[in-house]
Length: 170
Image (cartoon, rainbow, N blue to C red; front, side, top):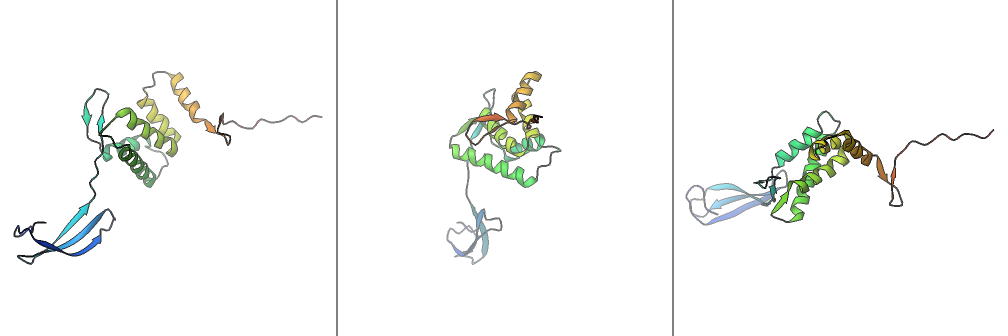
């Protein structure tokens, strides 16, 4: 590492420790020429895939834009900020695990919908209504009906319903 003071190429690491947030390594270095000390940080460089939009254009992945979309769907809903941050991190991890250079907006939208379905059903419907371009009430009610179906222990899907009252024989 070059010294920022005298541009000498030979510096030594005097001390290393993890940063406060644990995402980087903080290193104290000393120049072999001028003996001045300086701090450097070493971080993992992650490359997220480019997002291919419907019109074919490509944009850089943005954590802030993803978080903003979730926040818009979750506006005025009782979901803690930590849960939203966890959802964003989960989506990012899935994008990195996917290990491709590009993903289309459909794939990203499905990841967002999975997270919203777990966080808040109302926010999920809000997002789905825009994402899936609901143009009539029938499609809207079909999506709500899908939310009302929960998996049973046997692996089958059964609708969630209220227990019926049983008539007593007299």
